[in-house]
Image (cartoon, rainbow, N blue to C red; front, side, top):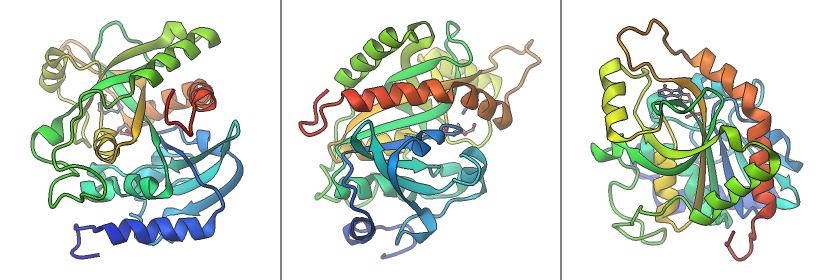
Length: 298
Ligand SMILES: O=P(O)(O)O[C@@H]1C[C@H](O)[C@@H](CO)O1
Ligand code: HPA
């Protein structure tokens, strides 16, 4: 490693080589489990799991990651089979508001690339600004607004690592259309369609939830759901040519009215996450099972 925040190709390679020496699994799909959704990782068959702290170069989990993931299992990388497809799951992710640099937040993505991962599935908990959404809805992410990114906080800042991707990567179409369509087909066939939406996710820095004026601004911008993660990981995955699919679990309605006496807290976010975690798990499992993994096509 060069300086505190500068990570070079060899650092990613070192982590990937270590993991390849510790497990026989060769995943093509990586899944980032958002808050309360870590049970997905427990469903993997023939598991090999590694605490983040034991993986050379990996960022360390903080108290937030532990509190927001499955108790006793936070901060693990879990390899295994989901419906016969080899996957790697992050049980607990890294957030900017925990104090990690964006290079650290996204470190695992480039390690996944070096492991041979072709598809990234991201999940998160989010508050809704769209008045037609309800708590417990699942939103397939069509696109994002990366507010920290627009303000210059971007994991791709600094010297470009050409081995991963170009200096100026496009982000239009980063959320794969075929996988989104496939998710809707699955939801219809499983009877989930009534609570599945498609919309725009906005990343804010957090850790505070939005003020009413901020919520109104996001609403005017066309944001359907807001959260504090996901965009940095998606940028880095898109940069290195991974196919991306994202889901937001709507855990609360963002307060937009000065008359509203309700307010959101992280505990209620986790409660709703738990309520829908099984459905989300079913959807992701079915999606992985239907993917044509070798050809990187849906
Ligand atoms: O990892 P995610 O994004 O699911 O974490 C949740 C949602 C917000 O980022 C934060 C506050 O609830 O935790
Ligand atoms: O309302 C919210 N705002 C920001 N992040 C969130 N994560 C869950 N709910 C929210």
